Length: 73
Image (cartoon, rainbow, N blue to C red; front, side):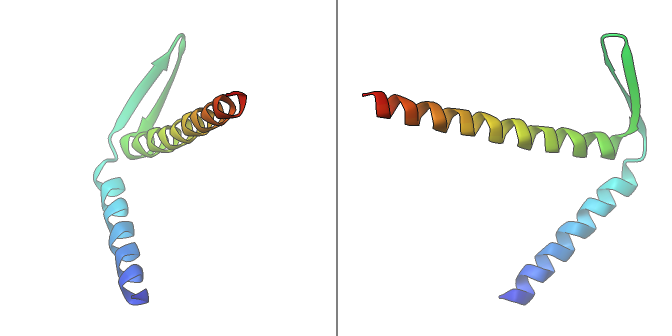
């Protein structure tokens, strides 16, 4: 089973590296008067990480709110 996990990690890492190599085009993001130009693969990774952070934050807020609502009942 350990070899299976190691194999899956190797395959996933290879796919991520392949994605990064194939998406070296640049993309420009603008917000208000600021703009930044990044490789597309870096931009996708950054958006993924921000999505994980905001999703986790929202989930924790909902859990805390539901817990407080149950305690006040």
